[in-house]
Length: 527
Ligand SMILES: *[C@@H]1O[C@H](CO)[C@@H](O)[C@H](O)[C@H]1NC(C)=O
Ligand SMILES: *[C@@H]1O[C@H](CO)[C@@H](O)[C@H](O)[C@H]1NC(C)=O
Ligand SMILES: *[C@@H]1O[C@H](CO)[C@@H](O)[C@H](O)[C@H]1NC(C)=O
Image (cartoon, rainbow, N blue to C red):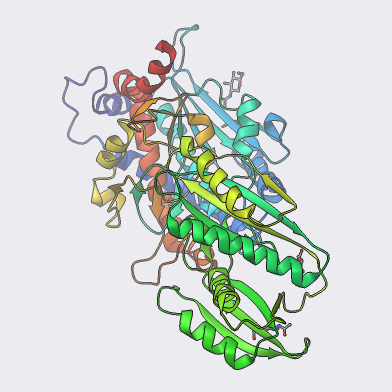
């Protein structure tokens, strides 16, 4: 046993004694890690499905917290140092493990790999962002690394931090302030998505506009005036690179980063035919997956109920959503030369409220441009007599740092171990945002956009969970929730866990590679 382990350690690529050829019968690191998975993955998959079946919003992930802490404290007793309610956050937890094989010097600084584990869900659509798979990858990859470093006699530390509330209010910012990420240079996380891509992620901020008038009709009209002004701004072009704005009307089910799949606008002082004709002239194939109905509203005299349905989705997609169809209908009706002086707008079934809020979800490729996007949107909203404008925490952009993408591509090249669906690409297009960007704290040259330095290395691949034989969906669509619980999707999480584990063992066992990967941080210290 011992001897074979030693020669396996020698088989680790550019390891210390790489000159000596590995015996032909030694398993490769990838097949070794694959062989551990049978003992590790099934339990963790069950935990992931349990979380998927019990969706909890950010900072309320009590069930997820409890089952994870319970599992590692009891079923995996002694394997990890487990901290419940870690870092001053009720639903955060921490796993820590260190391996000091014989001969490890007492003052020796161990290399450390950290995993970020998210498990918050979205209102109404549950795990439509698949965070049940992020925690699955974090737990699985860390457990695989733990086993590998023990068996291969590698001195190392492995950390997993349970990070609440990615979707809402930047849970990782609170954890960062509490020191949760200290002492670890390289953090790994993987996010389920429609495809396999290594890419940067956008900066984001939400602008909440509050409208307060003395009548329901007045407040709905004013909110739509603002929605129209922001739509015109976006059509004319927002400042910055690949900037977008997605409006969310704060009625019924809403979340700032989810495109609404159901919007109703009531119209009175017009006619059913006029509204039908107007919507019909606007609606076309550029509204993906959108359908609408125009009906007489029995509860409002002369009222017409325009109700629009769509697939929902991620706010970063900024598609023509149900809300956009109602804004364009509002535009057409209010700019009509024959506008009836009695024309009024309302929320069907909800006609008494004289307060209405609209959230504008803003994204921009580089953090430095986000302020000018925000200023432009606020100026558009201020063309109305908006009562108040509030903003939430900025999510900075996350940059791809050097070396790790190439290493990851190299690892996943072996189709016999990583399966056929490993068509990874490196892309410059930023599909979404993440609060993991707080750990990285990238410094980007304002003129050239070259990455200058980072506080920490954060690697955040997005892995495809769409079964090629079935219909795909995008994050935050209700259909994505289903994908996040399928065997195919969970199987993809297992594959990515193995790839991240292999990557980790390479970093932990090879000082030179670790140095290359973390060089981006040294630059900062020298500046
Ligand atoms: C837990 O922490 C203690 C104290 O730092 C350490 O001696 C022990 O090895 C750790 N246990 C594991 C499983 O890593
Ligand atoms: C009614 O509208 C108000 C905003 O005007 C909103 O806060 C509330 O959630 C709505 N109620 C329903 C049932 O949609
Ligand atoms: C408006 O129309 C939709 C779709 O037909 C319907 O579900 C909803 O109940 C209607 N609202 C009212 C207030 O009648």
